[in-house]
Image (cartoon, rainbow over all chains, first blue to last red; front, side, top):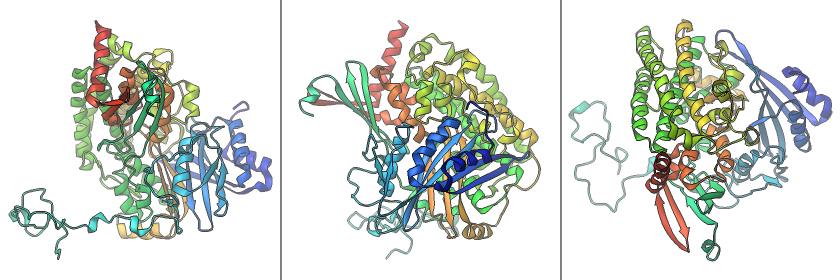
Length: 215
Length: 409
């Protein structure tokens, strides 16, 4: 903030210079839209898990970062957590997003909380705990966020292994038929939409019907 | 609970359910007399698992799913998702499509902000103003219907462009709508901002300081009303906005000071309606000719998407703030990871500092002031002396109206 604005390349150097081999990979994505093709920049930094908090500290030296959200990906042997920040907002056409990605092996899914640095992160951290089974160490509020209270333990909807949503929990509503224990409908059932017949169909508009050809 | 509930503070749960909301919210208020001492909330009462569904569908199917994430931001989510997929696949969107996207997004902002203004007026007990704003909102809905074919789930944005062009005959309809709004804006500003009662109810009510707004990652008009200079249309060029001179609207530009209260949120939203009119007009006059989609044939589009590998971010300034989509594709039909961050997701935590220390009658307007789709105040149970009394939304609303009347007399 104090010594002017860094270019995207300098932002990357700010981290590679300080953390050296702890930074596994960096990438700057540039996207140009509209007639003038003015670029926007997305900076991606893959780093060591232990460096996450120091890196956020280093980011805060540049500008107080806005945390959009934490997202996560099941990569098989490990989970990839992505912390999506943006800096230099308020600067005309000069905002960059900075994403820190860390890999968590499934044997040790713990990650320190960042809510001491950015209080608003609790919301997203709670979501990651319930949807990916990550253990956020030191989270000030570890209740569930979106999932219902009676949701089974040990099931994490975004995981792609055995702890993901089992088939038995998926309700295929499209496959449901008319309940059998109801009285017969006042009018015989016809498919709601039959393109050939046009308006000749006797059913009033909006008549609910089951799948055509049922039974 | 049994002994605790007999003494002050009383615990007042609000919510959780209302069919109109994406995420109905369960509030728990700790009340001391009329004053809110602490607040807690639990969102997700109808989490639909849209991301889970998306990770089992292809991008062309997902754009229709994203249309349905929110009933009001029909284009923001689709645009954010499409932009992410376009970056992964390397699809270049035609310039004309960028302009059409911006025009629809601005109409969405107009109708959303007018809807919100009506809700705010209603919560304050100013129902004639509710009827005025909702009547004039219809015109923008009509234009959206004319441009996209739909009033709500627009279905206009597709990966690679848009699905319908804007033809010269439609310019007249758009122009008519814009001039109506520009003529009306002065009246609306006058009705909202110069009204003594609205000022008394909203000034220094539900304050969110600039520091809190930054710490809690708030976005959009809620953050701007607290003096945080953020607006993706200004900061982060996407679609046609890189070509335009959009400036974030901050309360101090117009009032000389920032309070970060409900009043400032009204100011920001109303002025943004005028700003959107200017943006649409500029987009219409500068819209380049050419195709409006990069790939018309869906089968080809799907083949491109299927081959793509990589990850990208799509960000869009929705009416309520930053709408953020992260997409990762691994060369399969469905994206391997998809994360949706709606704008209210970032704004909900700001309720806590806003509501602390306020009166029970101010809850509706403060909750509404971040524009969360208000229906969470649907049902309130007051637990007092161990017996509970259900406060319906009507009761709560009546309390708010009574407070307005008291101030007036």
